[in-house]
Length: 338
Image (cartoon, rainbow, N blue to C red):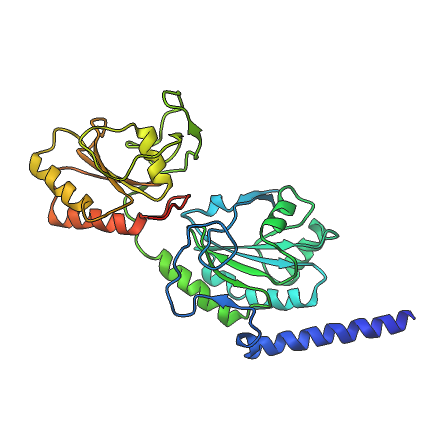
């Protein structure tokens, strides 16, 4: 009986491997499992979900190396490849062989995470899998903190599910079969090209998204004007203002992907007209206000991004403000449609 069982298992394993090898050699387009943006630009939906263009669900997990990882920790830093495995799974080994040569090419801009969904896996088994398959990236398994919640959130119901999530937290590719080396290289090449786009202004660490009541005290912000952190429950209407608004209110606009142009009262009327002309180009998402606490005459803020300007603004600087708006509009952690 035991011999018969071994034969059946061998036949099943051989069949699985044959199907997967066929997919890697060219059958992947026919199996209907790979979903990506093809040659078209992928538009972010702004909603949290598991489809291409959705913002991926956040997670906080422990790894077999006793590190804590979250999706938020990669924000504005690296893209992330997530794939599901089990240490004993033959097709997972095959996928590891596909992924191994890709990792060194992209490790400066992309991180990899293998998630075992087998509750019998442990650190010893997964470390052996990592070493044997030359895949020196992050590994985790269901018994570690946060992993079961992640498995549920991402609907990890089988092996070889792969997600590629860009540095903005947006899903750019997903696959429910073994992803071939060539496909992975192509998709990560697109991501790397996007990441090569020059970031504008200064980046500031996220101080959170906590709602507070009007007048409630809070710790100091880490930028001037602030670009994240404690804010009122109600954002301001977008548009052009002649009076100052509370920082705590406008931060809520930034959270929704808004852009805040602010200026000190001591700038000239001509400069105010320039800013008004820029803000008037946008029917939503852009807010213009005076703000005398600015440490430079003009500031342009997005969520975790800030540019400051002296006056008078040159033509190049005016174009730079417009570029900043176009690049960071709708890139807050919460999407509210125009």
